[in-house]
Image (tube, rainbow, N blue to C red):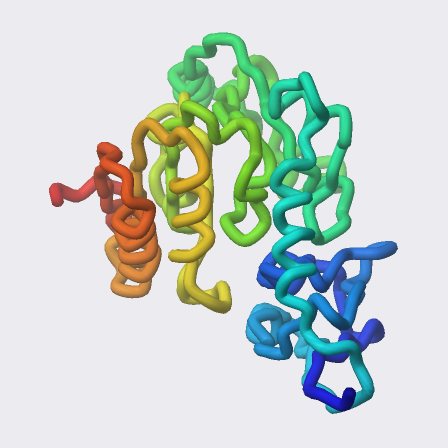
Length: 276
């Protein structure tokens, strides 16, 4: 039959994986770093993937294609949900499969980061600055190159990868029992002690509703609904556009049907926590 279906221009595709993430039917996958329509009968022709593509590599065409098969799509989705290896816990199974995210980039493979209890070394750095242990640029042609002689860097508190809302898998094992941090991109730059104040002991998701296409509500709803989330902290900037992130998180909490403790923290543009 001739029907409307997506077409992916591989020349324009940059391999970001946003379309594969947006395709709930599983019609799109990443192959050799490029998005590919895997099965015509999985594509419903509604085009949820189109607005997510940053390079406009996806368009509609009318061509001979198999009819959309809803039953096959549901069976495939059920198979993917139940794909964990028998007898293994989620984390062990995920590690053994080494499944990359839809973007196909090895650096974006979902993984947990296990850390020992760490204390911030920020005080040591500030002391080093006062005592002149951060030296001025050398005069031997290395203009602008600063380096540290003794101070210890602040320890990262990040507990998982990736962190972008658009990229993180919905059923990642590290969500089980997690205190969830949903933060606007700019907050970590504005607030100096962000790792220790917010990221520590949390699973972190970041995004920017002004720059990212689409609404985060559906993705966040699936994460909260399908995992044992213990609490949600929303950290946003005081600027109006950050209201979109807060609204998406609040709507996701409502749509999940769960009663979960949550709070909103607002950061000012000069890096202070504002009273809500």
